[in-house]
Length: 222
Image (cartoon, rainbow, N blue to C red; front, side):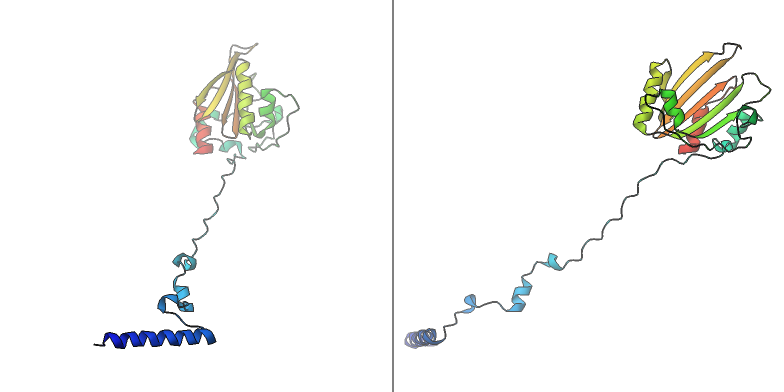
């Protein structure tokens, strides 16, 4: 063990040497004053700086419009088609039809100030008619098209103001008007059904149906 005298001598000698070095080239301090080495500096870098970036999420796909059938025999399932339309002639040329099962038509732009029925009619992309040329007024037609939801809602509001009875059905809105035929003891039923951007029109006279709108809704929306 060193004596007190020896320790003081060592401290004094060191201090004197440091003073001499300061006057010449500076004095290096203790460990707390030392400049950190490059390796020490890197070790202080946050670990997040070298973390693997999270993968970019895949873009979300936007659902497109509901695809409408292009063949009139495909608007409902086969069993419903047979029980509803049977062997009634489809798209007869006597009434301006194509004589085929195709019902594709090109939508048009309704004129300014068009009424509700004209707005819906202009959106038609599929038009089908079942009617026997030998019949007087009996027949049924089905039309489908895409209509911007706000425009469709406004059109059905217009129908409601004209006396149509509107209800919520099959996750959509239906407006119907039943009127007696002026010449024959039968009724004519005009039904408009809107769901999302799809509008369906059924116009039938003396052709009974059993929830045809429901069958069409199942065919289109599953």
